[in-house]
Image (tube, rainbow, N blue to C red; front, side, top):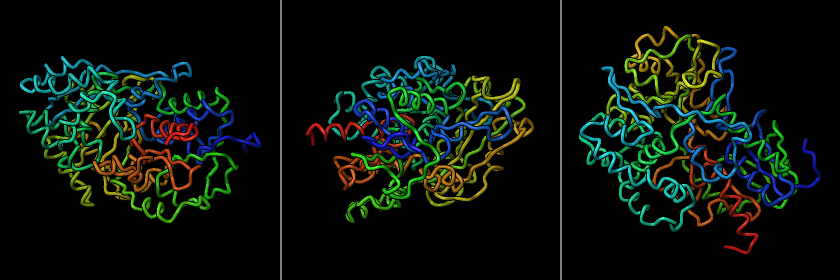
Length: 478
């Protein structure tokens, strides 16, 4: 039960965006209440013993470049609350079945040198964005508006608004370099022939060379815990195991913030949303789902490519065409027979994740929206192609289908971990086309989930910008 009789604001949902909104609101208000339906906070940043005792797995997000790069999180000095990032020497390895591999090193120069004939083009493409990383992120990780660094953004737009297929074919000679970039852009879970898919590849590569692709010591739950401590340290209150079905379940306050997707918001009774707004919100589109696996291992994954042992993140996709076909299959409602796989091996760099001498691994592939298909054998077979003997080191496994992902976290509608499709149109019209995307038709009700700008990713900025919108309103702004 809540401790106070009166609150200035209530936030529903204690994922990274709900926590960020609560912290930002706590800067302006004396009494802020944060409610979470689950028994633990964290949303997409939770950790648990999913396989065997002593093996700590990240249930959802695990590699955290955007949390380290987040302009808001950077203001909070989260290390004082126990948050510690671990930086692998190699942010990303992209192996091939013959035992060779490409990789992203923290150094742009080392990465380019390893690319051979494509190295010069890669460095020319990335250098301006690496040099201007904080200015670039400040502009792209915010609601639509005039950029603070217009010349850098113009350069970014020139490359980023292309399809990844076009960028790869015009910039790089080798299909292996093209496959590397395809693996980066595939995180967006939209076909690589679509406009602006190049943006995702460029941003993730830029992050690798600037803030890195770190993991968090002890698990992603430590990020949520640090944010919660930061919020409580400012007088905030958190109540878990409190599911909200109606506005009447909440105390009467001046402002309500919901870290939920449009579908859940529409199911909450008594909000008084207008018919027009409800109709527009109902048109919000969700993307493909993911099938997620975690393993307890008796030894590290036996990769053919040695460089993979230095990387926390490994992308499995043999060629540009293979990765591209995998994504097209999923969007056509089919399980790909050769799925593109994102894999993480945290225990190579964080011994707290597993008992001495043992290891963990984490992976997912894309599947059709809401799929109940069990593709565990398919995923393990694909890993075996790059790491013969992988199955022999497995002690236990845990699986989550796309449908099970939604059961675990209602914000993952149909297994969509991005809070909604992130194609070019919906990237700038989340959750509806509006100059004020966080506002609903009720002036005291705000949406602050990843279904609002800047979209998916553990950065907290959807919550932060929603709170800033309220502050502008209170000060007489538009």
